[in-house]
Length: 111
Image (tube, rainbow, N blue to C red):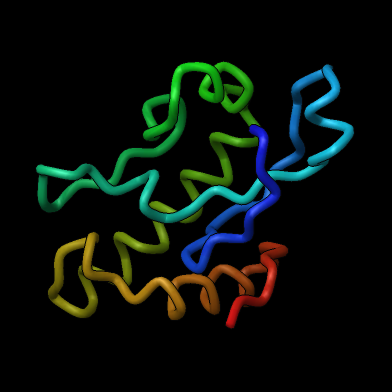
C-alpha cells in the first residue's frame, strides 16, 4: 500500500482505502495479474478474497468492488486460456489487458 507502481501486468486499478497518510500519497494502487496465479498449482486462478497479497494489504482489498475487478480479470483470463489451450499462468497479460480495456476496465497503458 506504500507504492504507486504501475506493474507491467496490472489488471485492476483500485482506490487505496487506507484512511491514513499512505492513501494521501498513493490514492490508487495497481493490482498485478500475478496476484491471481498460484505459484505451484496449474489450471487455477484465485480471485476475490483469496488473492495473493501481504496480510497488511489484504484487509484493504477484501471489499466487494475490488473482488468484482479480480473476478472479471480472472474470468477473462480463464476464457483466454481455454480458447488458446494453455495454462492460465501462460496467458499473455498484454492481451488480457487489451481485452479488459475493451470491456471498459480503466487500466494504465504500460510500455
